[in-house]
Image (cartoon, rainbow, N blue to C red; front, side, top):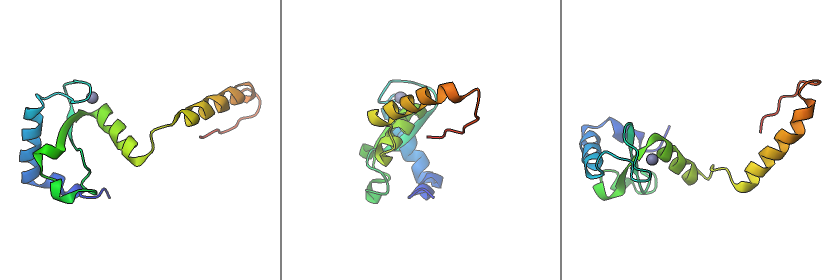
Length: 106
Ligand SMILES: [Zn+2]
């Protein structure tokens, strides 16, 4: 369960979320995309629970920027080393594809 997820069910959140979207002009603050936007906590609720409803702590993000930010926070953004490793593994795997069936999950 995501920390603080219960706030998303409150009417207080619905209101502050709307205010944040309106302030940001209904566009992603990172890439300017419009459409499906999510309101993100700049400082996560886990880190700053007292700022959960603080308009200054909110930003509108599109889904892709939001998940990117979440990944960065989780430290799961693939590093260059990981990308290089995956590429190397893919290269190695290619000749074996026809003969032996190997399940390569990286
Ligand atoms: Zn975006």
